[in-house]
Structures are given as C-alpha cells and as structure tokens.
Picture 1 (spheres, one colour):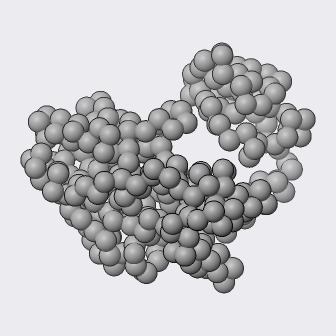
Picture 2: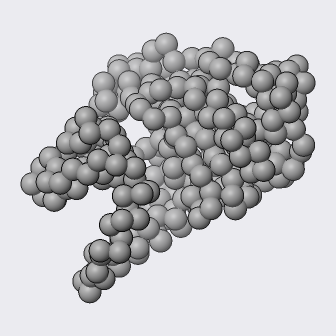
Length: 306
C-alpha cells in the first residue's frame, strides 16, 4: 500500500490472506487499515526509485494476465456507459468526453462524493498527467482550490477541476479569483441538484430513504459570467463532446455546467447481499424517487448483461 489512507477496509483482503508492505510519509498511518509486515516511512516517489532496482522479474504471470484481462473487460464496460446517448444525460458521459480531450500534461483535480466515482472510472490517468483527489473521506470542496493552486504552480499546463455541484457551491466564489488573476482554469460541474454520495449511502448502508440531500439549483454558467469568466451549459449527450472541446479551447477561466441524471447510482463493481437488502429496505420505507431509481438501476444492470 503506497501513500494511501484507503478507508473502505471491506474491499481489502481479510487479515492473513495477504502479506502487506505499507509505504507512508506519515508513520502514524502505517497499519491503520490493514496488518502490515513491513512499514516504510518516506516519500513515495523517492522510496520507490530506491526499491525498483532491487526487484527481479517474476516468471509467474498468471495473476497479472487475469488482472489485465479483467481490466480490458472493465474498460469496455466503462466505454459503454461513457458513450450513452439517452437523456437525461449520464454523468459518465461528461467524464468520458473530458478524459478523451485532456492534454497529455493536464492536471486534473477532483472532489469527494459521487464525482470521485465518475473521475476514477471514466477519466484515464495518462503518463505525464497529474491527478488529485481530496485527501480524506468526505472532505468536500477542494476541487476548485486544488485547480487554482495547480495553475499557479504550473502556469504552462492545463488545469481542470472536475467537481460536483455540492462541493463546488461551497467554495465557488474562488472562481472570481481565477478571473481576477487571469488563471485559465476549466471547471466542469456535474449538476444533479443533490448530495449524491450521502443519498446513496443513506439508502445502501443504512436502509433509509434519502433525507436532507436536495440542493437549491444554481445556474453555474450564469454565475461564471457574472464573475467575468465564460459559462457554458450542456444537458444533451450529443452536444457534450463539442462543449468540452469549446471549454478547453476558450481562453481564460471557464465553468461548464453539465446537467445530468440525478438517479444514476454510483454502484460498486460488486454489490453485497447486505447492500442489496439495505437498498430494498430504503425503497420499502418510502424513498420518494423509488420508481425512477428502480428503473435506472434495472436499465444499467440490463446493459451490463447484454
């Protein structure tokens, strides 16, 4: 485990099923999530540069071959989701189009919430790029400040914030900072008018209907214009690629308001029986949007099976 404070320990191997080495800058984090045989304290890049020459090629390739084959299948599925043309527009489409058009040395900053799911699954990290995500669980709003800092530190590189409407609205006044200092940051706001991660956690982990997750709708494109920047809106997947291209090629700071389906769930790759039970329980308790959610989930699963 290298430089990670991965909080979802249910997705890690059971203790004893794997041997663990953890490389961490902060020694207090070593062994926090999983029993560790060897703890290494240091900068990830510099430590790996010292360790890599000591490695020898492992002739046993079956595990790697299975993993690569599975990843190939996974990317085909992600392409299927990222190229859907149905409306309302799916958030995956925005991430997929953005991922295709980012420059080779782009710096992409993301935020906590369902936005992290679409970023991780549909925007490939290419050699030469830099990707940043808010450092700990549920730390909302760093996406835009990260992008501002990146643009100042690397003025010659493309700096992009890929954020949700919940996180962006907390610190969106900083877009005026971009205008004031002529920072050409491009902000892509996935707008579903809800605190999506909280909503789905309430349903899948607690078995409760969503409560207190609605956001007051904001016209982020008009807000960007009011700040003195460029504001664009897209809600049709057929226009998404064109709008992404327009935003990335427009001089100065830009906000793209991408209006997406609020009922698209960030489902895990494998749904546990308990998660399914809690999800069903939340629907039975009176989830206000249950009919639309059921229809969306059913459609997604059919697509995976076809």
